[in-house]
Length: 393
Ligand SMILES: Cc1cc2nc3c(=O)[nH]c(=O)nc-3n(C[C@H](O)[C@H](O)[C@H](O)COP(=O)(O)O)c2cc1C
Ligand SMILES: [Fe+2]
Ligand SMILES: [Fe+2]
Image (cartoon, rainbow, N blue to C red):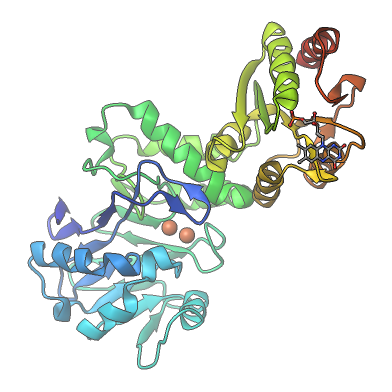
């Protein structure tokens, strides 16, 4: 259903209440694919949705009182299927020309049958007049893919930011000022940042600097709520999350078959707590990796534990390590590998390889690997190790 943002500008996004997994990202609260409609001499649709949301997108267009065939332009800020999946169907309904950049066109052609699609390429032509307004296109490569750009409506002071500033949540609230618990909104935005934009965070300060030159009244992202009252705050938070500054916080990530590795995890955790460190403990079988990454973003310590299973690391921990490695959290962290084993310890070496790739400072201790079940005396060494770790610079 269309929601008016300003005169002749509507949100006509689709709400995916039931999605629970988004390329490995657990989405217990669903997601949204925000499209926006600008009615002017040329009618413009900004970004689309996943393929299976097509019918709902048509309902949105209808409620904004526009026939699909009256859409002149479709701006594609990013070719990922969550924003372009409907295109093949939509292009058939409309005679629209796609406005995008050269890289995005290339990536669209690699994902769809684009025969007959017409384009306006904005690389050397970053402003297009559509009647009463002019749209400006600013490339933001790698935020999220090489093809990303944002669209700015100069007269309306609206930034259509695509993946930037988004959150994976399905809600009926469309604007930040409608959200009752602002901290939850920031937390969802942080989780999105930690799992989608983290590897490219070094590009964020430059992008924010470029955006600061624009007069922005609304930030309309392609997922989640529209920013209106907290634009400055969310930009500051983006700068904070991309700064690699950490808190005095430890994230302990583990799995365990018979609770031996779990006991080590909890005892080191108690030691860290005693030493004044904020502690989070996550079991990789029970917590989605994206929740864990949100906490790792600004943690000082990352402790990863696994039993040895069939001369290897436990599979859920391996999966987490592969995920974390790709997201490249700051190397300015302390890494601790631990685990229980029976006859030949194999898991911690694998964990440390990931820490090495990420440039974490690895701390070793004899209490970190234990044969079978750790006894009281052993566990008190883990506790003492946690206390000692808490004092580390
Ligand atoms: C199916 C299975 C395979 C195992 N394979 C190995 C192994 O290859 N090498 C080894 O040292 N220990 C092996 N173990 C022993 C476990 O590492 C040991 O029981 C450890 O204490 C389990 O820790 P957890 O309770 O945290 O899971 C295996 C245990 C199980 C149940
Ligand atoms: Fe994306
Ligand atoms: Fe997206």
